Structures are given as structure tokens and as C-alpha cells.
Picture 1 (spheres, helix red, strand yellow):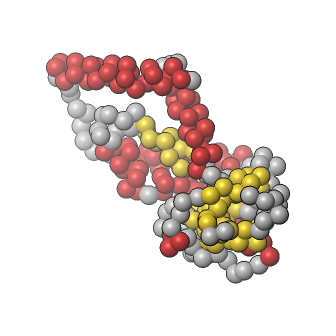
Picture 2: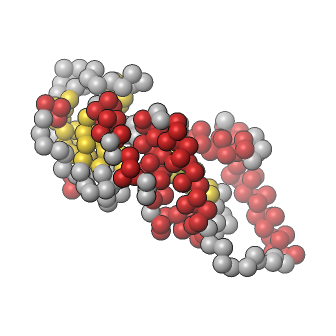
Length: 64
Length: 176
């Protein structure tokens, strides 16, 4: 998937894993976009969080 | 779902195989697993079913009154320390416990960042952010020389970027 991904949105603590950091940064050559998960309620409640993170990235990149 | 129903704590789900990190309290009721839907005031608004396998749940701390839960009560949070110690309690209880163990999280900056947000501690958040940035920077492999792309591969890349934009980003942006 190298050069095909723009970024990976994932819960912050997964980046403690060296293998995950390496896959995102060096193998897939893209950026991690992190979000906090301490509320720990329903998985569906994070859809809006992920959508907002993606929107922020596109805004930063002046895509929108 | 009845508001007077009680839900028994079945265990804590933590997506990583070890701590430190926040866990998800999972409850058992009517033979199904449930998680809390938490209001902005930190109360349980409702319980919603979740699909989880029993063997993936960590054992909860010793049974207490707090293991029986119901709608309207203060939400429960869980945190697993690096040594496997599990703290379960209200936001205030878990906050107090975390504040006494912040020093243990210096080597796990992303978890520290989560904890700083949970505690609402802006100084700790800045410190954690700096550590996260440093670790991400160090993770980038810098040993290889920069690749010089040929004209044709550059053209291919440009075509691919345009293709990605047309097929992926453009429709996504249109939905926002």
C-alpha cells in the first residue's frame, strides 16, 4: 500500500507499538492521525471523531 | 431496555494485549454484552450492545458495588497500568489514581497524551505532545538517500495523485 494511503486514523495508544508506527510511517509512507479514546463508549460514537479528523487534514492541505 | 435494569460488569476490554492504556468496561445483561453510552455530564445515558468475545475480556478488579450498574449512574472508566493493575471507577476516582501514576507513563507518550486529555491538564498535554512528536520523528527511517525519480515515474505519480483526488478525496469532500 506504499504511496497509496494519505493517512491512517487510529486510536492514539496504538502508536506505542513500534511495528504499527513503522508500518504507517515507513512502509505505507503516510502519516498517522490520532484520536483519544478515553471515553470508551460505543464504537459508533467515534465515527464523527474520525470524520472530523479527516476533514481537519483536508482543510490543512487546502483540499477543501 | 428498562431504566431500572441492572448490568453486571463482565470485564474490561483493552484492544492492546497489555497496559498501559484505557479500557472499555463491558457489562452483561440478558445474556448479552453491553457498553455504556456516556452523556456529556458523565452519566450513563443508555447501554448499547456490543459484539465481543468473552475470552478477550480482562478480569475486572475485585467485585464491589460498582460492578452493578444502571442508567443514570455516573459512568465508569477503566485504566490498565503497565504492571497489569486495573483501576475501575468514576472519572474522579480514576483521575485521582492516574495523577499518582503519571510518572510511570513517561515512556509511553501516546498513552500519556490520552491521560493528559482525560485529566484536562494542559501542561501535561504539551509535554506529552512534544514526546509524541519526538518519537514519531525518530521512527522515520533516515538512513536511505533521497530517491531521485525519473520523469516517467514522476508523471506516473502525478497521474496517480490526480486519480486519488478524483476518485477518493473529491467525493469525500462533497459529503462534508
